[in-house]
Image: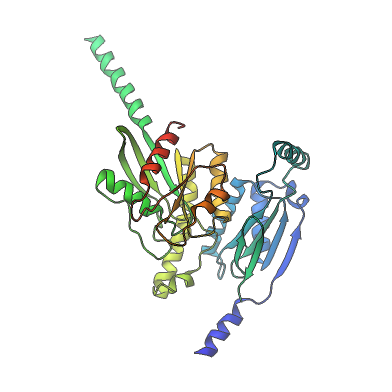
Length: 137
Length: 213
């Protein structure tokens, strides 16, 4: 009994990689292409750190497409997703400054989006002060 | 005779416009097991005598969007008619093995997981067709979940009024202040859908939001 549990756990992760992608890699892509690119990376057992963040509608589509893929791709159980950005309590001047910088760069470069396959990333624990990635053992 | 026909025609058109305007589509969104159906049931039971759907401790009990038409909420002498839309919980991952812990068979777990993924897709589609959204969060859980932030961000982008409900305030671990801190720009109402606690404040907020529709 003990042996079979051990075997099962060992079989869960066969290896993974962590990849950082600068925002420039997705800046010129449309929403379809961005989501496709992200999901292709994640499906290769890669935890992705993306500079910047997707729009809320892109994030929603990412969730929808993920659900559709769970049905069609064997052993794919979904993703874990988190975005680290400003705490939203900046002063008006800070907000304006950030807004201008975002407009010039084409995205919120101060943010980081973390996306990992659920088979590898068990949970992304987030609170205002820290973010923790818990991996499946 | 002709005048009478015209009069009836316009009366019918105007009454229909007025009637449709009064039926506000109220969507219940949130992560699985937060208590969306429990809250929708509580409201429907109070005002129609019937429930909208079944509830369970097993996540993803609601796997199809459920409706209840013509729910007239009567609060402090004011009346409003709602179409209640109870949606499946939105998640980024669904693993059939999680359902095995609840003693479901492998076959039933796999079916539940498949239906749950379709339910999430259906929930997302319905975002296009709601007037007001109640985001139901479990106040015993960490609110800094990206799914919550994504849903709220999406509703803001669509200019849909949002009310956040911190459910399960009857539980010891409940911390609705944490939800208020996570979403300082939104009104948060702490309730217990199970015991009907603080629903007065909830109805007050819903009526206030309805004016924005």
